[in-house]
Length: 58
Image 1 (cartoon, rainbow, N blue to C red):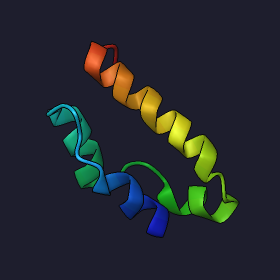
Image 2 (image 1 turned 120 degrees about the vertical axis):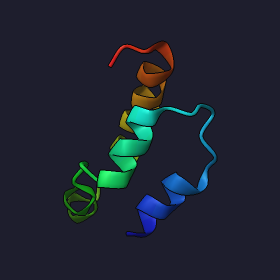
Image 3 (image 1 turned 135 degrees about the vertical axis):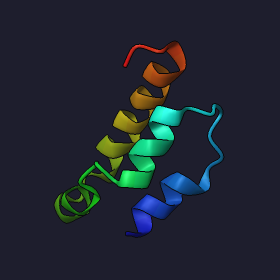
Image 4 (image 1 turned 60 degrees about the vertical axis):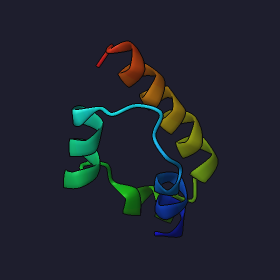
């Protein structure tokens, strides 16, 4: 769970209700990510998600 808190500690650069709902309902399988130890890949995916949300492409 430590990786999750590191990601969420950074203040978002936007206020997206869709993003907040995703965090609230925890639809992403964080446990699977931690079990496979792909934190580096998660960082890339997380930044891509943010860029898509900022552009409104989701």
